[in-house]
Length: 276
Image 1 (cartoon, one colour):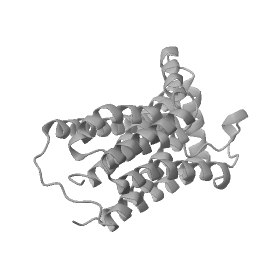
Image 2 (cartoon, rainbow, N blue to C red):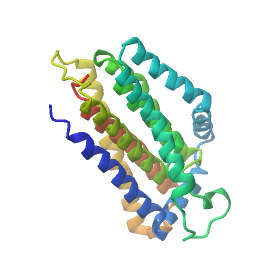
Image 3 (tube, rainbow, N blue to C red):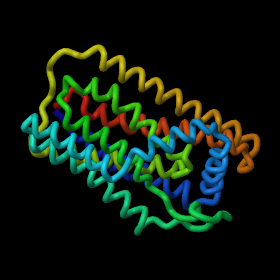
């Protein structure tokens, strides 16, 4: 098996996060567009905002610890300590990296006028990182034959969290996209470590039709949301420039956030295709 894809994916994830930071945070245009999306979120339906706050509020230190315990328990029951270490390491390392970057490394220069909490750096998103790394950890540790069932339940939740951070105005679009890139990079490095240890083997059994249908469905959703975001932003920014309608900018940001999480998840899943 050729597993050279994992270092390539890891490097791509880090480079993607860096590009997002440069374009969205270090340019006046990037900050203007993202602030417009935050203001546009004020126009969202109250029920949507409440749902976002509820979903994000469920991600706490205790729920994160519970997720780590569940992931570790699956690995222990399988008697696969290597997978257990890698899966738990993805969740823990993901948080260490994004929190260090957000709090100590990445500045947010004041290129546009803004006050309050929005003046502080919030990239990368810790909540998005938690959701995506939990999904990646589950892909690593869950037995191959149960991966489809796990994806059915975990993938929609992990994808929704990134979009919810925008709806609740907890984060900007760049925060979620950078978190997706970093989480993917960390998970790819963990997978590469497993491969170098000789822990991974190809699966030669039959395909599972349900899983194929599920992956195809989410792939189509990812393409559709990415295209929709491009249309919303493309037409609005082309016609009105940086004074584009804030509601449209917010809608576009939300679709891009969902697409980013989906594409990160599908990329990692593709790397683990028929591997156990």
